[in-house]
Length: 453
Image 1 (cartoon, one colour):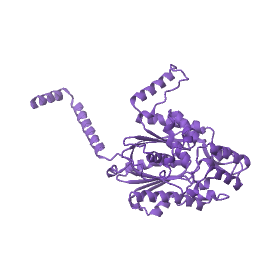
Image 2 (cartoon, one colour; image 1 turned 30 degrees about the vertical axis):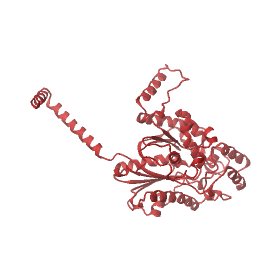
Image 3 (cartoon, helix red, strand yellow; image 1 turned 45 degrees about the vertical axis):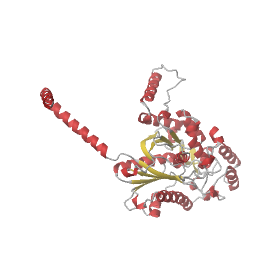
Image 4 (cartoon, one colour; image 1 turned 90 degrees about the horizontal axis):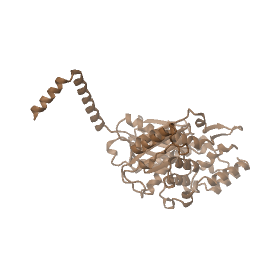
């Protein structure tokens, strides 16, 4: 047998040129080396755990209190009060959502000190909770990333946390601002990139938005909307690339796709901070916002689809595009919308408002139950900006919906205009009885009205 093989090899060697053999052997060595490298290196980004801020009941803002407050404060005329009342009653935000203490004062008190107090209250609480839950020494954190769009103090927010908890002097810390409601996923993207470079590290990601300094006292309706929608909240997320942490992690990051359509003027101006004619500064939400979000999502889906969808769904989508281009497909039927439910079990759509959730559900051809986590988060906590997708994942955990092997799609939108997606795979058995931000009220949800509307 050996003689036969040697003769065969000798025959092939005689027939083939030395250059071919050299290239063949070199390619074989490279393939084997690459296989060994990818086998032994740690590729995974693991989500060990996360915590969402639960405000005290004393900070609740029932609809009646909100309306009475803006009437008594004297900051708005009758038309503005009526507009805010009308929008709030249809917003899908319930009586349990909260605002910081200074917003409860009459008139609302906004200052650097008050904003710093709100930021410290939220972040210090969730960081302490997360680290103590897993008995993690603050000095073991290697990477710290924070995001808060409209509050960027000096020293930075990451410096606040480093000073409070005594992190190491060589910690890699980055503070993001101005990135809008999609900054939570963007921060995960940044942490992921850092973890790809720095091995055997722990990364702490902090996402929040400061409500205290951003109340608008003018009359422009597009700028009054943030007064109604945004509420107090935040999330702390602990990531790792250490092999030993896989056994204790809840999720593994599968894919992360970022889309920015800011080159389009309508998209760029759809969420815009500016002064009105009277000099009152606020964030304007344009009428084109939903159309812009749909456009950004469509662009994001075109990159995400090939990463997660079965080939049969991808082929059907490609065929519908070809038919549309060649006018074989009736225009009223449109391009086939891929069914992402064939690849993903759960959806966490940014709780930017009822219209946003409805619009994304329609764009993705989802059922009402697929958007339940988003609607219930909007109802219970309001729009907490970049942290909303974490309250939604927290809801799914508290409901016992997540099973080992399930995949979750977090979809976030933000000014610029951006659409960011993260796909997480559940790699452990999630205990729904473990205490989190939903534990005290999960048995009340889903509420019937918000499920149907």
